[in-house]
Image (cartoon, rainbow, N blue to C red; front, side, top):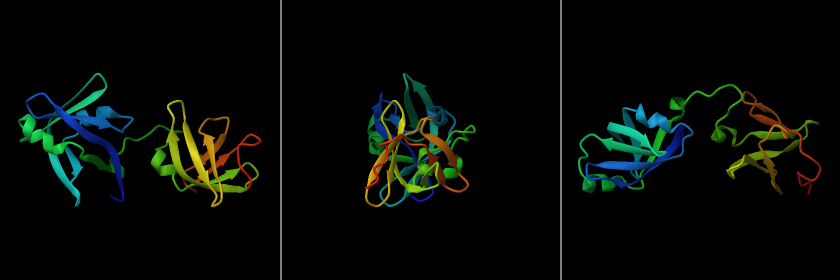
Length: 170
């Protein structure tokens, strides 16, 4: 699935007319209401299904595929993952980044000393947290402007200003 981005997972069926619910992993769930087709994993690759109807109610996405007209037909989609190509992502405003793009970036302190590489990003609800690994240690740095000086997309690096004790120097 290289070059693909997971945007959701099909949940259980809804009603008797073939609708399914979607757990959206996208910050832009409204995207589902404008999509004409959807790519679902099938274990060996992906299948493409045409969307007949899509709507959002109470922060939940509901989809109906063409030719899927009963609850029994819709049950086969449960648990299937929904992917898009990276170039189909919503264009972000300046100073906004896709989390998945930052994985693998080098991290430096203000003195240009390499601290490590971003291995993961944890969302704890309040803010995202960079997981920076240098081979020996793992450090956690909140993605807030007090600590993040620069995110350089072109050079794939992040410059931070950690407070004393934030970065383990072992």
